[in-house]
View 1: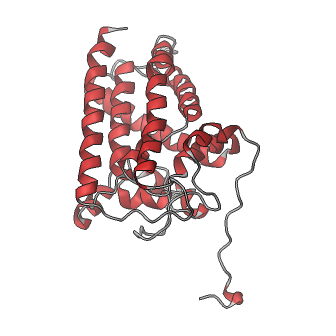
View 2: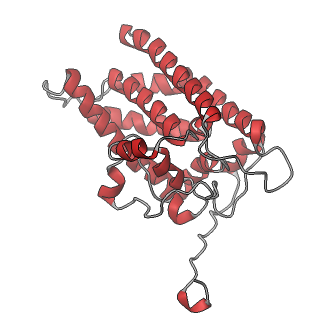
View 3: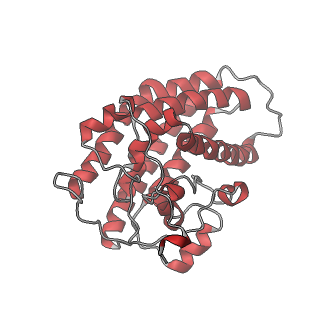
Length: 279
């Protein structure tokens, strides 16, 4: 392992864990919303939900040194070598972060629009409430697919491993923030939302209404969705149901096999027309 990776990995891990612990504590002291009661009997919420999310995360932590990092390092050694000299240093890092966030916007959108990818990404969306732990909840299949796709992008765009590790840290910190249940002062959140994804933006993406779920795809920067017409016009409300339209949360072990079961994504519920007597 190179000296760059050896020096950055401890800082990356420490920064991520500290940020996560900070938000897990802060959102319990100053919550924006209260977790709803379970809609059915069984261990679906509360500490069970937190344990389920952290369990999925721990499974992926083991994959990082075994698959994700080695694949990324291998890809950086097999780039096409077009990177100009001026695209380096601090400027190069900034440009790489913007480029990677642009690419992850389209990858996130693909995970919603391509059925086989949605099978894995759905596990993230089945969470019925959002807090900082939701940022860690991903199926191992999605993690592996993301690593393979990113390897191709690393080779295509000649991305250095330093930029990848910095971007991974920013993605984790951004995801913990915009999934969090922290009560952010409205004026501060409106100011932040002009540049980065905030809870008010991302909670709508987790609304259990497909036309909102299939919108608001941004990860770090908030300008991609308005630019490409995927920003939901609906505002966040603390009472909006979270999850997947027409699907209930699954037990922990069932989440691991769910993407491999034969099924179709439920069709979105149609909005009522003006002729049916609805307001």
